Length: 321
Image (cartoon, rainbow, N blue to C red; front, side):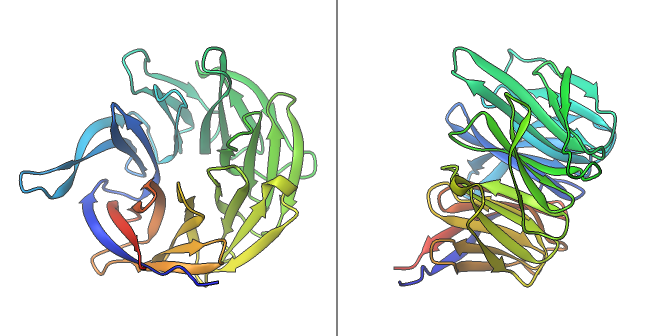
């Protein structure tokens, strides 16, 4: 099998924040792709990519959400696109309106929060909205859209491990998947409140977990400098390992290909996971004063990355024929 070879090009760089970019999300609004970035500078910002007078690409600041009293650790967009959820070090959970139908809300979280997921089940006409959060306490918090805490789910096999990442599984809305501080990966059925399956491969805290767009694969990265791939169709029984040689801060599957991007301390690596080979490695630019800490795909070949120095960069990946 011939390995895929690609090259990358820096299309845009801007100073998004004054502190570390902790998370980023992308969604389409009124026909335009909007990038949301969260930071340790206590703010969340929305950016629109536009052309300036000379035709050069630039990032236009379109929204600023401020109110957190500490680091913003995680953000999540509602499936409806109407609001954004954030959690942080100030022990609050906040809902920010993106459309005029929504209002700003916040609630006490009881402890510092690390991760959040806005999720919904059912049809568009009769959907049930959930918000899941994880923090210092070893429980999965379940909220409704009004930020009312409805229940807490806890593992019995480890009553001290806390949740570091929460993700939805495409085509399986009744199940969410969580990464824990003891290296475990747990799939929860949100209708029954029971564990569907549990996987273990990392011997350390998991910092990143992502699910492929078709819901068949999961990738995890810990502080052991390895990325593990899990087959969710087999409840994680078939997995392979990718050694990076570097600490991995963030992961994200591409939207249209079996590519997996990883932000590390020294570069961004993109793998073809079918061929298990590196497609391209993007070294951190010389003017970068930090590491890649958040990553996402705008489309199949356009990558956006947030860095620990507060900068944001957009790259295009071109496959070489």
